[in-house]
Image 1 (cartoon, rainbow, N blue to C red):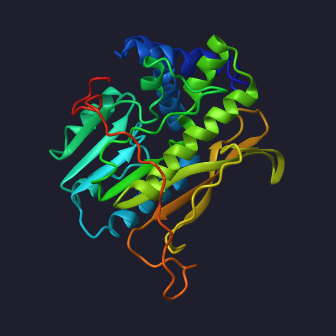
Image 2 (tube, rainbow, N blue to C red):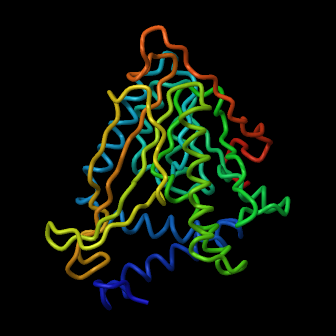
Length: 315
């Protein structure tokens, strides 16, 4: 169907282009079945259509990652979770700083594979960081009576910089859509699973990583009529990102994700983006002199098995 506001032109050009790309891109069946390939291709084409509107957001993301990289005491291992199309990733800058960079995603598009090959120290890791696919294999999928599994994040314990790159609000969509269709999930069921997946992911970056952790994510969605907000959506399902030791490097900005008529003939869609930077071994702003920090008794996630392997092959 034509996208609202784009009419026949949108159907004849961009949608046909997306369909051709879909059928000519090799991808594992799981990547197609759960909609990952479709989402990546849609993202690619929208990024081109909205390049001018997106540029401030992408520039801010790259700058935030570089600033976080320069906070690292050592620059050995950098991990980018949700590397996607590398739109927000300053790959050359990272490759010049770190000994090895791991780009982690469920699937790497051909252009990403080609870009990674330009840098001898950039490796591609393919797999599911949520742990949900493994839970499904073990017949323990999350649901009303089964919590979401711990995340499976490679190099969580030895990365000097680990970045959750605009993927937090995208982690659950493929699963909840599948569960709604195949298991009769209600909206409440889906929201609970979404909340748990985001919470597990964010807590791993904030509390369990040993290097500098960064979460870049959209948190709210606004539909705008001029400057007036028509609708507002909490993209984090009422979840709040963990507090950071200091607020020095935290940032926030608007992202004009869909200027009219991309989604609506007369209305813009804007997301609010937040960056949280988690540094280790520094005194918190709230901590009083001489006060001891409370021990962290949270269970650690299971050790990563060999599903994440170097190279572009899917897990």
